[in-house]
Amino acid sequence: MKLHMQILIALGLGIKRNWHIFFGIILGILVGIFLHGHEYPLVSTVLTFIGQVFIRLIQMVVIPLVVSAIVIGITSIGDNKQLGKFGTKMIVYYGIITTVAVIIGAALALIMKPGIGAAHYIAENTASEVQASVATAMAQQQGNILNIFLGFIPNNPMHSFAAGDMVPIIVFVVIFAVALAKVGDVNRPIVSFFESVFAATMKITDWIMYVAAPGVFALTASAVSSFGIDIFTSISKYLLVLFIGFMLQLCVVYPLFLKFFSKVNIGILYSAVAEAMMVAFGTASSSATLPLTIACCEKRGISHKIASFVLPLGATLNMDGTALLQTVAVIFLAQAYGVALTPFLIIEICLLAIIASSTCAGIPGAGLITIALILNGMGLSPEQLVAGFAFLFTIERVTDMMRTLVNVTSDAVVVAAIADNENEINYDLFNNPAAYEDIA
Ligand code: ASP
Image (cartoon, rainbow, N blue to C red):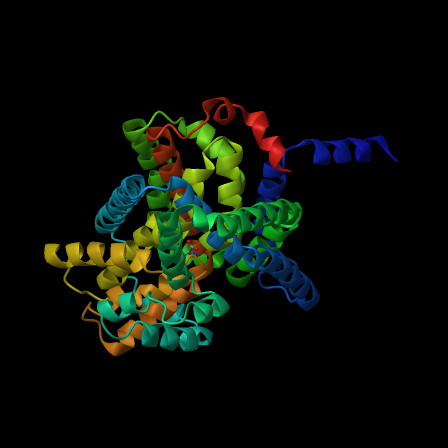
């Protein structure tokens, strides 16, 4: 074999898997840009196939993983007092991060005014193929908020399991696990059973990660090829607002949050969870990334007790990236259609974005469906509502990838802060980058 090939292969095998996935994303963006506007049906079919193989494999382990993680997490925390303390802290931390996200989103959208003069390109870029999705999304969000919450209580958990509805599943499993914790030692057979399930699903996650780089490459390439870069020029201001908002969360809010509430070093945390962040970007799904988020955190010293309780709940409840996007998107449409943005309306948008984001599942596109909850009360005409919504759908995937990366990162930030506060983080492992190698 030629020397340069040997060097390339050695480099390929030698560098960390993080870099493989990173190169997968970059290559995916380049290939996607190239493919846009060209007709290569075979290439698109192959890319879709590879991407779907990866997503389906990773989704395959989510339900057993969530169930086993929550059961082990809650039963190992044991007494009610401690559980209440962790739970309250988790909700307060997630609440702080999401509130800051909507404030940033609203402030940026009001200062940069991305929607002014945007009505014409909303009409131009409103693809007719998305009309069906729009109709479904709007229908799903009809009715009041109470009905939405009612839907979270599963009247038949088996049905929720079969349908993969994460929020009702989590509600059921949390109640079940608290009951198990209450009944004492008699729970041992079930808890041991779930300990085995958890260990096996983690092993499967390790195996699946061998196809993460090609999977993320294929997903990114097909996403980018579907809209190309021309869309960026026509709505650059809207995307710029989102990008700045997400960067502020990642580079200012999370570091300050960790400084304020813990002694966790943000750089080390980001390097520990880099793989999960990139997979979140590629898959646009916090739930699908969950197995990896748990693996990254635990391998670097965050206790199983905390990670297995806080992360599954975070992957469904904590959606600060989504909340930021929803705030910006709604203010953008209001500006485009000349709706008067009174202080009262802005506060209402922010509050509804916090609710709408935390009621959405960690799957691709969920945030756009729950945005209907906010848009319905905006006073837009039915035509404007449909056009505005359809426009958001047209540029959905790229914004979904960005906001999911933010959602998953904040899950990791909050779990690290709680673990630090509760002395549940092993700093020898946390500060040792080589520890990550263990995961493979
Ligand atoms: N895709 C996002 C997530 O999984 C949810 C959303 O659509 O905003 O975190």
